[in-house]
Image (tube, rainbow, N blue to C red; front, top):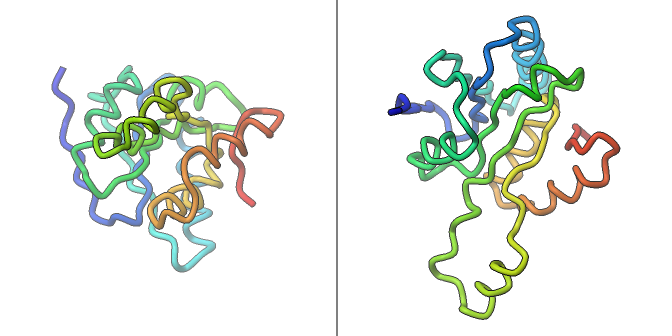
Length: 160
């Protein structure tokens, strides 16, 4: 299946793709929380929402391939079935930089084969802008967010 091209107007806007259409109320809650956070901080760009049924049922691998067309993007967030069913509404954050290993030293590359870095983590809607901004600026790397989620009782990165 050929997915539509994502045209994101602002590199500072987190990209959120809806891949589950089972609960419109849950989706509206996610959208409201994303808007609340962006509205509370004047420097935050509103999230770029992809709400198109052609994305219904898209897997994380398919979304990664489609989002990787944007070379400026470091992470994409999916509103999937877990998002819609969980009261926390955690989005699935996918690391687009996880496969940037073509210039790696062979010794380091072997370490990655033996212990691959995390490529996905659950993020509460209120933390999406923080995660996206820190990854775009390279203030933190994806592994640090995965460690934060692992320390959370629900396995979710939350807003500070």
